[in-house]
Every structure is written in C-alpha cells, then in structure tokens.
Length: 140
Image (cartoon, rainbow, N blue to C red; front, side, top):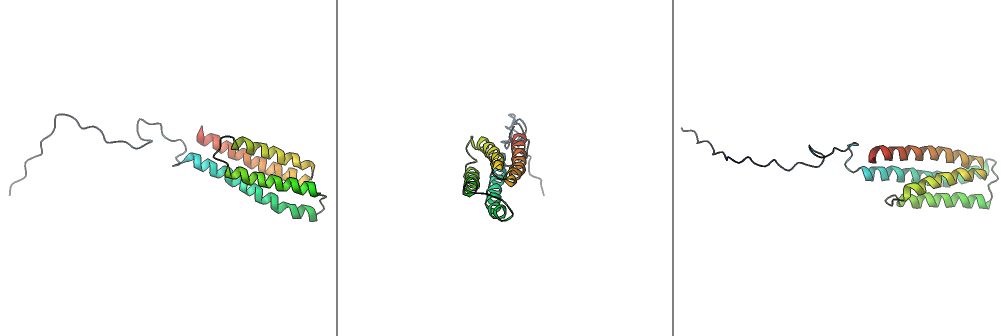
C-alpha cells in the first residue's frame, strides 16, 4: 500500500477566520452578560413592579392599624402605584431611570401623609439606589 501524496501548500497565507464579538481585538464585555441593557432594564422593572404591589397591599393595613389615611391619602398611594407600574413598562425609554428616581422622592414626600409611607420610601429608595448603582457598573 502506498501513502497518498501530501497536499500542496499554498505560498499565500490564508486569512484568519472571522472572530466572534468580544474576541481578540474587540473590547471584552465587562459584565459577561449576553445582553447587559436588557438585564439592567429587567432589574429596574422588577424593582418598580415590586414597589407597585407593595404600595397597593399597604393601603389596608395602614387604614386598620391606626392610620388616619384619608381618601386623598389613598388616592396618592394608588397614583404612586400606578405610576410605578407604568414606569416599569417604560424602562426602554432613556428618561425612565430619572422618572424612577423622581418616584422615590415622591414616595418619601408622601410620608407627610403617614409615617409608614416614609418608611416604604426609604426602603424602596435604597433598592432603587442599588439598582442604579448596578446599572452604572454594568453599562459604564
């Protein structure tokens, strides 16, 4: 049996294969996420949806456990919850993160109606501050 002859080599070097995004020559992604923008939007949306649910669930305990939350106060809480839900769906917009920060300030100001709203404002303000910190670390 004879061995087949070797394949002829070309004198021109072949071009390197196409390299995927994030490979050598490209700047690697810092976060390692496939779609960091979507991940950050999900974090912001999740925070706002949770805030909306908690605000709506907080109305009855405030009324029963000794709160003098008037009709105006309940209206403010419902309006803040609706605003949080709308903002959660608007996180693709560039202004949504600023509007979310404004919502946290408005919830803190609602603490003038009842102290428990100020407590919720502090809790969700801290959660929103964490979300914006994560956003800046991932996207910047």
